[in-house]
Image (cartoon, rainbow, N blue to C red):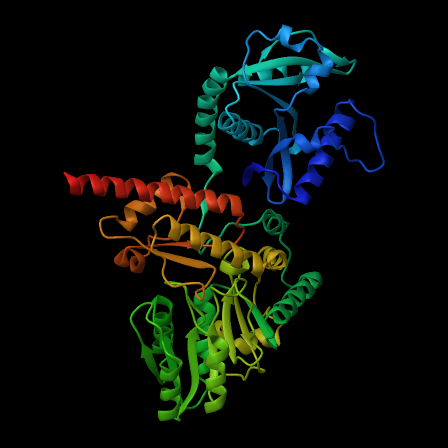
Length: 536
């Protein structure tokens, strides 16, 4: 369960706070009267700062804090100062509430740690609460001490309690130990391009009981998924197959085997060169434009090749070169192909779900269920413009016509993966990804990182070139130890001393930025070591 603790800021969060307030202090603890709206807006709402715990978009728990007198305790204990055993800079902590389904998790402790952090930041030396008598043991465990008489009414009694700065700091150490264990178990944040972080809705869809691939409802649901994929991309047809991106590219290569003439493959990174390998294994006839990694392939170069080689009938390229983040302008390449009578095939494995795709005139395009689509790996996707021609010479599993003729189900399929993908594509938000990517790219640059490319690169892949003296393997390992998973262990990344942060799948901005900040701290620490060594 991915829990993020933050300060509430937007309308939806406050709306959920009012709902949770009602559930806890009206329905569970009868402190206030019921109302038709089932919302309880605290009388100090405008003065409160709310620390909330979020599971996805759901507010799972909250604590409110305020420092303006009079406190609610001032109304319950008119001589409040007389009861306090010590004096100090006070704040009042109220409305502690955790949804029932999250009470046996680490949510409470995460809320408390965020609360402690906020109080210390504000230089409060004492926190006051009205603790429900049902949870006195819990409050005492945090470090709160009781003072004064009980307040409230029968069924809703509260014990005034206080916590000093010293106890704050002692309890913080205990929280940090607990949170460190929680982080080891489930607090990691992944920037991997696969498998990507999975949204709870997608997990729930995947967890449903598997059904037969011959089940009528499943057949209809898969047909609906394929139609949705076509609407998203403008493609005429989409086949969804059990497999990976490698399979989807093999399926494209098998179709290119049917075409007369030669081809042209573009490569300026790992995955462009993999397309060349696909083509060689199928013994396709083709030429290439090959560049060093991250070196642009100019459209004038493509136009020249098509002009000088009229036998070129197809062009094959990646849309996003995943090894660098370099993004090809597919629409412009398509215009060149149309001018010269060539068909364009695109590997869109790293862009589908990340940037809007227009595949209306594209001959064939490959993709996958993971990466930008934000689901589990295991489904290969092939988009195609025209009906597929049969070819009995290719293996059955690579015969795309078999899939077209059988509604993508010529063989055993996975209902779990299909329903997960069906749910994940509902969550795609291109603007959100782009905004987050721009913010991350800017933050990385501000903290001294060298990021390949600029805003014309894919928002889903940010490649960082570490300076000489800082090992990408060591840096990646340190980040992993701190709970942030970067892509760095592939041979082609290690060779170039690169690490990558992929903004794919369920990426929550606060956690993303916290992980980027942690990366920056490790980076600066290494720079300090280098600087000290050079001075000596």
